Length: 117
Image 1 (tube, rainbow, N blue to C red):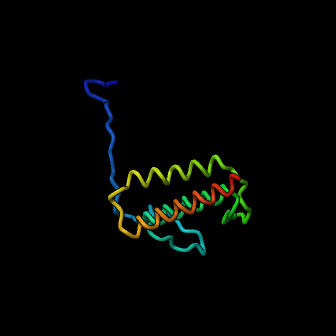
Image 2: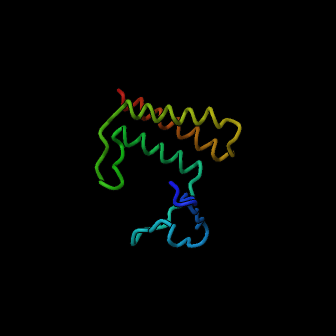
Image 3: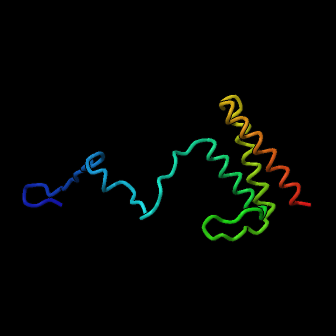
C-alpha cells in the first residue's frame, strides 16, 4: 500500500521495560499473606508426601479442613513419582536429603499397605 511516489509501510517499535518498574511487575500479595519459603528439594518431598497422606484419607485439606477421600490409585501414583525422584537424583543429594527421601518412601509405602488392606 503505497501513496503517491512513497511508501506507507509501517514498522513496529519494541519497548523493553524489564528491570525498570519492578513494583508493577511483582505479584501482589494478599493482605495478611506470609512470605513463602524458597522452594527446595525437601519441601518438594514433603509436599508430595502430604499429597499421598491426603489421598489415603489420613490428613485434611489445609484450606477446607476436610479429609481427603481415599483414592489408592492417586496415592500409588504419587508414591511412584517419589520413587522416580529417588532414581533420578541418586548420587546428587546431600546426606540429609537422601535420608529424608528414604524415610519418607518407607513411611508412605507402609501407610499405603495399611490403607489397602
